[in-house]
Length: 111
Image (cartoon, rainbow, N blue to C red; front, side, top):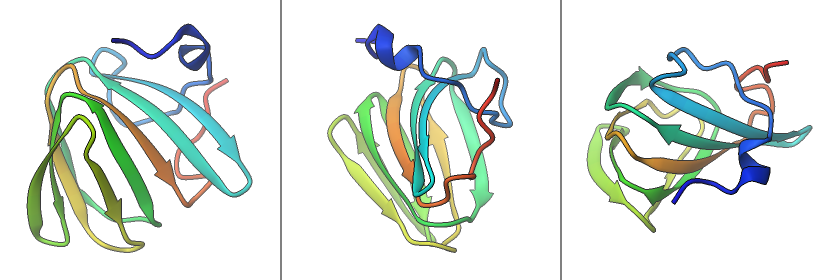
């Protein structure tokens, strides 16, 4: 099931992937960023690090490597990535996830 219309109407963020691969909607405050991701195609997220991140899989599957440990996350599973810890992922088409970033400016809001 897609996100409801009111969530899809939130602003998008500027991510380094084409719109035909991932769609975004975001709520931002001075204290953090909440991003709603919809992955339209399989994609690989290269290893990287930043401030703390928490997420949950709504639908689909993410193979996530956090600090050298790999685990597959499915609908209902949540993950916690401490600040500065390297992580990367393989994300299957059809996956929807919600990620909360400690850094309010993690991604630039479009528009």
